[in-house]
Image (cartoon, rainbow, N blue to C red; front, side, top):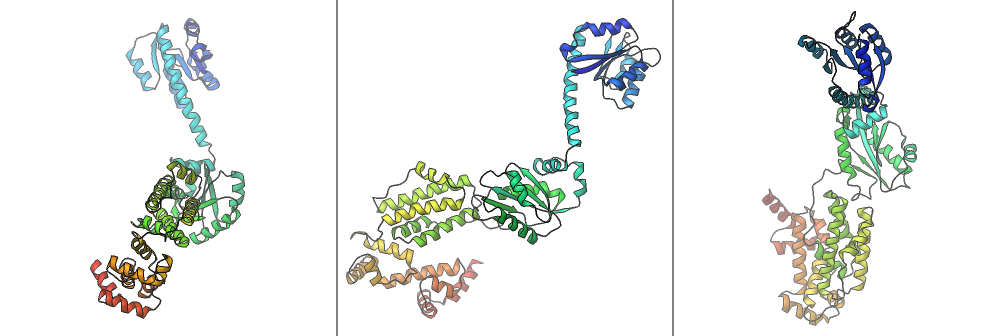
Amino acid sequence: MLKVMLIDDEPLIREGLRSIIDWQYYGYQVVGTANNGRVGLEKIKELRPDVVFVDIRMPGLSGIEMVKQVKEKGYSCKFVVLSGYSNFTYAQESIRLGVESYLLKPVDEDELVSLIQDLHEKCTEENLLYSQLDQYETMTENEAWKIYLEERRKKHYVLDQYTNTMFQIASVTFVEPIEKRWLESNVATEHLFKYVWSNQVLYLLFTGTDIAAMKRQLQSISRLLTSKQHQFQLLEEDIPFEQLPEKINELKQLQKLYFVYGNETMITNKQQRIERQILPDDWITNVCRVIEFDEQDKLHTYLEELEHYYQKNHYQRERVVTELVELTKDIYLALSKNHQEVSVPSVEQMTDMLLNSHTLQELLVSVEQQLRQTSSELNGFACNPENTIEKIIEFVEQFYYKDLNLKVIAELFNYNRSYLGKKFKKQTGDYFHHYLDKVRMEKAQYFLIEKKMKVYEVSEKVGYANNDYFYKKFKKYAGVSPKEFQKQNRIEHV
């Protein structure tokens, strides 16, 4: 209910204004009247009305003079000037003083109703604004920090004292909702200046320390939180006060990587400044081979490669799950071409399994268990006369680094050694040991050029325990030594 005052030296005008309309119906209460400007000024000080109707010409202190003094004293009431004269000079003076309206006597009821409805709406909006401003002025420092960091509003004056301060910032996120008071009791540590909550994320502001010491403090906190699956995100830099809201956004980007880095208790912005990667074109083919030939340790290596691929590309949960469903489906489709007993899981089956994982690592464990089960049910060495050599070639392409020879291959594929040797030569044009050397040399060239590996590393990588023997084999195949080959191709790539 807004408070209204009526000031006029004519009693009939005052009472007429009081009774002409139902003030309460329109959201007003008439709190007082006055018969001249001086009395009116005192009552305005006492009653603090929202709206004042005042006669422009009264004996003693005129309405214009009274309005001037009220304005000078800083009272916020709104004025409506009344006059029995249609005098433009008075109207100009009223407008200059900032009055809300100028009404002629006798007051028209419809005009008055329209005016007070407009004033009521205006006063309500302003009162709300003043209330918000009052709340802002009395805001605690913690609330000011939250608004400054999260809502990016102009900083509150209570934070002016930190303008020249350098900060270090981190955040901590959890898989499951966390009890805030419990967490607060466990994060207290040296140099922790302030913590600010945003939903289930806790932002930590440090001062007076360096990044190395801050990491140690976060690790100490982490040990206290071992019962809760969590992760710290950290910016490895000193941050001026003015840049804090911008840097909070960088922390939010790190928080989005929680799923793919679920095995890490702390990730930093420097760790993420890495080149994006692509998954090798033959990844699915290689995975199928290790499944067929029951090389489960190798399967784990390929899934680690997939984990690093998702991490390096900063993929978020939704994309990872979608892609992994498709990848797994493609693996089973490829396996089913050679193994009729393999059934391709439905998208629904795959999605149900994957969505129950909180982190990429949990998800990959589920996938690996599924593929290991499939691997144990398959016999990659089973073949028929039509596809024997094709199977052997696939095996050599995958396991060229092992201690292989025709005898080993014949035993694996349950063939007579002599017969298999002739069959292999007839179908490929190469003796088995020549073909194996060729595959190893091609792999060696790849490791020397693309991976920039040292010669002795390549020798071991492609299955030669003796470096000198590898050297002779490579020079015979490529025409130059491994070192010279690497040097030549490095120049060509420049």
